[in-house]
Length: 314
Image (cartoon, rainbow, N blue to C red):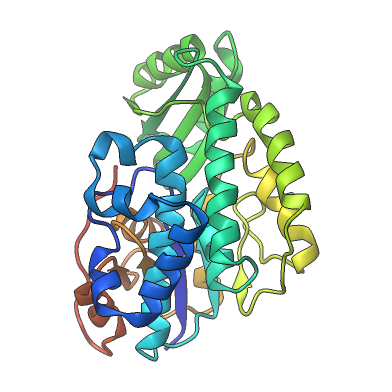
């Protein structure tokens, strides 16, 4: 079985995430303990919340990395097949590199906590915004962004008919109105900053300094980068790609298509939630996509037959 490993980004967090893996898997527990040693108090926020504390950018980013890495460790412990390719959505790209061995989990959780802080501090609260634009294609949304006053840019190309825009709050609101006028649907996102836009340039500069101090190792399997939708050529380019994705669009639809083109039989989402499974099915109809967000889900993902869980998308 040819597996693609998927790792989610912000919005997939939930109180209790990874706790079942901590209690049932020695390998997952070791990963989570290393994350806790790097960021004391992280596990209590993951396991006990409260939700508003877990949802803070500086907490949810390392929590999602830790949860995804723990689920993947449990997969390896259960003799799950090595992925032929992996990708992570936004901060999930860090988790993909932890799974592939390019980054150590302690390094990754410290990096993404800093990343979250830098992103939060790059734009004063309330000045930026994001919105999901549904039912229009990327070319239509890009044209709208070019026409409305102010700065608004494509942030996530998630799946056919699901594009996220990011930028100045007034410009995002104008883009949402224009999308509705063209027959689309606009959904404001509850986020604390305009992620994946050029407004995040100060955060990218600060993250570049942190990544320059980290040892990056050759990945054990192919990892597809958000910004290029292509396999990372070598460990030398990983830091640059992780910096670029702070300000560049997440090309998730293209990433899924690239994984599918490599002959993947099953997409497995490791960590918390199942949003990426839904996006995969929207991009590759009838794809076998399964969420390993708990031990039961992991066993289902390992099964030769098994069943896909029908999950929605935001």
